[in-house]
Length: 75
Image (cartoon, rainbow, N blue to C red; front, side):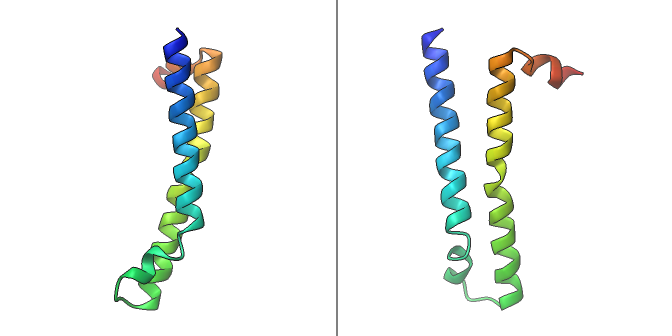
């Protein structure tokens, strides 16, 4: 059971780190490509939205800790 908690904590921490990095650097990635400003703005917004996956990660972690994860997925 201890390995499960460590792996879950590692997964959550890694997702939080990646989400913060994506959201923080979202304005820089589109600049690497030669494209129009409109496409760059769209790409920036898309990356920010992907950064909000943090919310899903944290909610999933809370549901696992409460033991409601499987019941909520099935229902």
